[in-house]
Every structure is written in structure tokens, then in C-alpha cells.
Image (tube, rainbow, N blue to C red):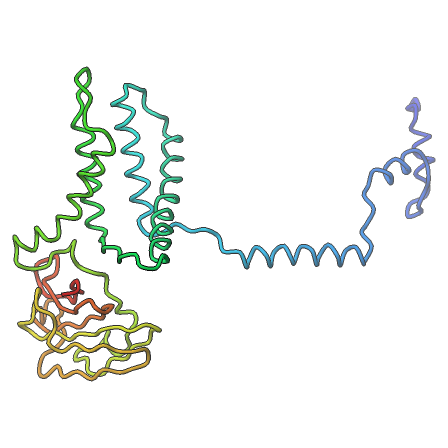
Length: 294
């Protein structure tokens, strides 16, 4: 059997097992391997990593605000209609997805920061309340006007700004028009309740003692059978943080399906909103709602 060239040299360099040897192979491997950190350097590296993690934990990451999904979807729809009106080809799916994500983040934050800046200026009037139902209907009207006002090959249709103005007019005029037509406040006019700020209201068949557990004033109302929208609850009381209100439900019990659909309701609102109740969307039973200020 012939000796392989270089094998004898490598075996001699390796030497006995367990003994550190020197040679071209060992010197090359040791030079390529990184040197271990000294204990002092290791402590500095661990301390630096800990400081970076603590900074990351303290800095709040931006989040999507309520209405982000709706803002992204409507922006994508408007972009599609705009490109069709301009005679351009449709964008790819990933481009539309990117536009929707950016719009979902930017539009709600821009509106929130603009409202905050408006309120910070002394002497400025209070901004009007706008519910999600108003925004939803106004955006659909604006999109419908923008999409149907232009025909390919015909004259130029309604511009984008005019479509947005028409949607805003519908959104603002919708609540009073519905009130005049029905004689009561409809969903676009209602305010969001703050039932989470109470203790003793939920889970009780006959709520009597209700406490305000939030750090802001609230108004709690107990509506007996016969007290319905647009009339507020006869038993309503404003509670400061930590205060307890005492109500008299009489013989009435909490409205529930299917056993007691016409029973009493309780709801907590932000002053000067007014507690009341109205029929549920299913058409059976009642639920507590917050009416706009008188």
C-alpha cells in the first residue's frame, strides 16, 4: 500500500492524543478561531445588551388606532377607482396591500393628532362628535359619487375633493334627518357607553348600588319599563370618582332574552351625555344607550 503524500507530515503534526501540538495545521486553525472574551469584556457586553433591551422596553411602539382597517380598505378602493378614471392599469396585489397598511396607520393618527392640536389652542370651538356610522356612510357616499360620476370616453366626472365634500355633508346631515324622520335618536347619533367604569351594575338582576371606579366623572342611568329613547332615564345620577349611586328598581328586573325582554336597563355615559334605552338590533329586548347632550 502506497503512502499518501502529506499524510505522514499531518500525522506527525497531530502527535499523541490529548497533547497540544504545534504545526502548520494547528497554527492555522488557532489563528482563524476567535479569541474568547475576557471576563471584564464579557460583563461590558452583557451590560450593553441589557441597556439596549431596557431602552426598547421603555419606548412605546406605534400602534394601529380604531378605524385603521376601515381607513386602509377605503383608501385601496379610492386608489382603484382613481386609476380606472385615469385610464391606468390596476396595481398589483402587494402594492395595494402596502398602500392599505400605510393608510391604516397614517390616516387615524393624522386625524387624532390634528384633533389634539386643535383642542390645545385656547379659544377654539369644540369639535363636533362624529360616530363611526357617520364616517362609514359618508365614505360610502363619497366613493359612490366618485366612481359613478365618470364614464370612459365621456366628460370628466366629479373630482375627488367634491366627492369627499359630498360624503362629509351626508355624514353631518344624517343624524338630524333621521331624528326628524323617526322621532328618536338612531345609531349614528348614539355615543359609546363606559359601562366598564362601574362596579355593581353588570351581573345584577336588580342593580341598586353602583360605584364609579374610573378617574373621571360618569353619569349612570337606570331606565324602568316605559322609559325609552328619546327620553332619558328618570333615575340618573352623576358620579365623581369613587362615589356610589343608589337606585330603586322596584319590582322590575334586568332585561334579558327570552325570559324578560321588557325589563329594566342600566348604562353609564360621559357627562353631558344622557343615559336612555332603546330596542336591540334583533328587535327583541332593550339595551342601555347614551344619547347626545340635550
